Image (tube, rainbow, N blue to C red):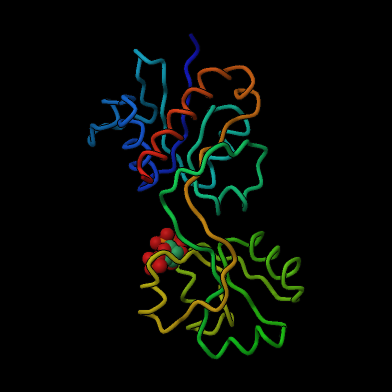
Length: 216
Ligand code: PRP
């Protein structure tokens, strides 16, 4: 039997995914060794392989078939726009993509002013402002700590992820508009979906049942 390979987003999404898989009896003992420098972890018995990657690289591994299955945030799936099948909403890692800024920026949005928007997600921001709001804006691509931008005068607003809202609060910013809800999703390589259909389908239906059980 061929190995089924998983690309997981390094960090909390990977831990949550492994927790979920463990509930289905799918474990990877090798992965629990914190001192290990290994990059790819194997469960020989179940013919599974796992590796950890940076979020934006997960859809890339899955599109090219280097991984059959990936777990990554919806934000990254939309932003990367790779050819992958999104098969399941895993219901964890829930947060929202929002337009945020100082309260005073509300007016600039209402009047559809030509404002600057700092974001790690230029594609999502562009789609929101141009196609949904019909507002012309200048998008400035940043790589992190986006909340800094309106504070230091780089931009009027930001498009960023809001989870608890505490980063905004601590920096005197507010949510001005909601772009979309987000959560962790399972994605599958289109060819794997056809070739390994039964194994993948079985996994998806087991996960779905588990999620339904958790929701009760
Ligand atoms: C994310 C996001 C916000 C923050 C939101 O940043 O970009 O800054 O978390 O969380 P909160 O609403 O619970 O405060 P992350 O920590 O991933 O780092 P980044 O600055 O590199 O984007």
